[in-house]
Image (tube, rainbow over the protein chains, first blue to last red):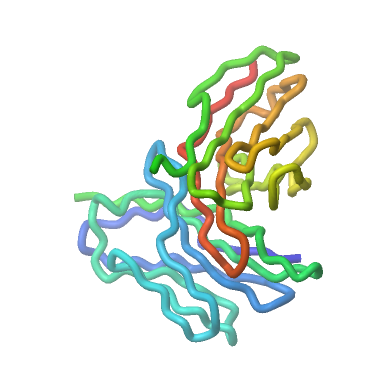
Length: 116
Length: 113
């Protein structure tokens, strides 16, 4: 079945540091890939997504490139801010045997704390 | 446009009690979902619905029931709560077709004593 493995946290960085959160996946089909972010006390919200190989999703200074050859979708940001402190989830949406792709499979989440 | 809302935000139950969590969305989305979030486990899908009047089991459906009588509402029921159901519950919705984004509610924190 489908699965997502992401870097275990917590990750603690100083402001303006470079961020990488690793994400690899296993899928039977040709999935779309997502990063969701959960700020303290809130629900999840989409950060970025990519729907085909070599696509780069980007938003709010974050980027991730869909690498089919390495089955990866690593999240990066060049200079983190205190306001980026949150839990980050990698997820995939795959076409199932019935031809539907309405379910997301999530990684376990990575807690990022950015200190001033 | 409120997006996805959940009621209540917090609840404490005793073992064996029942309750219903309500999810409402005003985006005319066809698909709706209930997840639970537990420390170190990420989000796990409990039940989902691909349209009014239809529901299906997700990854961890035992101990829960759902109903989707109206397109905009998705109810999650616990008939006899157990301490193992202590969790944060999230509802989500999305449009049908493609790989569209799921929109999440703010969550309900449930404690079962």
